[in-house]
Image (cartoon, rainbow, N blue to C red; front, top):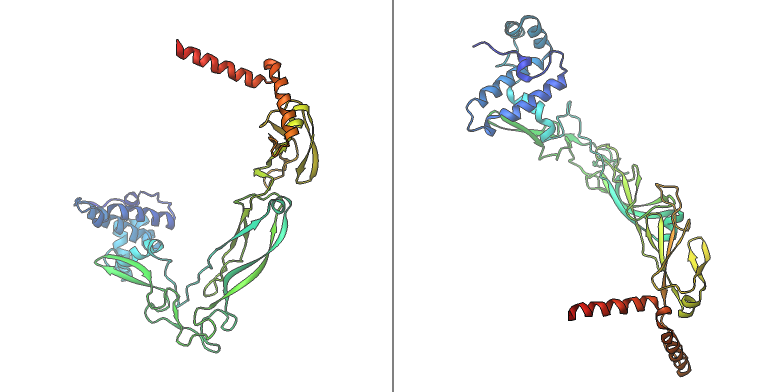
Amino acid sequence: MAKRDYYEVLGVAKTATADEIKKAYRRLAMKHHPDRNKDDESAEARFKEAKEAYEVLRDDDKRAAYDRFGHEGVKAASGAGGAGGFGGGQGFSDIFGDVFGDIFGAGRGRGGASQVFRGADLGYELKLDLETAVAGDTVQIDVPTQVTCKTCDGSGARKGTSPTTCTTCEGVGQVRMQQGFFSIQQTCPACKGAGTVISDPCTDCHGRGRVHKTKTLSVKVPPGVDDGDRIRLSGEGEAGRNGGPPGDLYVEIRVLPHKLFERVGADLSCEVPVSFATATLGGEVELPTLDGHVNLKVPAGTQSGRVFRLRGKGVRTVRDARQGDLFAKVLVETPVNLSDEQKDLLSRFDELVRSGGNKHSPRAGGWLDSVKRFFDRIKQ
């Protein structure tokens, strides 16, 4: 049976790059692997066909011979080079490890080089009052973290000594586990992926290369930050390992509750208690804002719960230059602890109001009319 074109097997063009060929093979290998297709007898044949095509096209010399002379050219190239074609040279486990190493590990090192790891990112919750969040400020914070040990300069070895290459993984940082023709890579259990072993650890960091320290940092809080906003401080996270770069610090803003105001985006809201007389006769009430006091005009006959909008008396956010508004909700306060004289005057006032019918209490009159109609419908 004639062999299919290798490019057709992998589903790539003849101009495909090495990465495109590798991705195509990885997709087919995962799709047709016998362990994933136990009920499909043809899966193994398709798997081996894809493997054979990949082994040829991944090698520049074999690929050039195949492009010029086809399958016969691959046989000739294999015989001349002595490296073997499908059955020799780099075995299937090596191919599988190259293709899937990014799934099962960080990749294999070369030349006994230690594995380099970036430091972890850190988070810090910064609590601010509303005034500071709106105006902005520079705040000092203390952050517990891990920094590079100065005694050993991060190597983890006692001063004057150096880590030695791990004999288990030969400095690669990973070992290969093989079961049949299935091979994966995993972190070396002896050196934990570092590629080196410390026989004489540093007395300060005990071989870790890093020590605990509390750093004092200045955080520039921009005006208008809100609850949940984050500020990123690049390179202020934990120190990396084996010379790796440090992580970042993310400062998350938490705005504390305010006694007077509630904030929603750029807008503020507050409650304003007014006396019964002011709500009835009208007047002015001094109203606080973040910029100072303003006078709020209360019209005569203002009902409790009415909301007044003061434009431009809110805040600006970090995302919008528009100044928000202040919404003031009027709450008519019921008098308490009245004297006998005050109670008598209030009773006389109530009699006078009642004698005028519903013209002094339109809402109450309308409500009583609705109640009367409700009960009339029930009686019917």
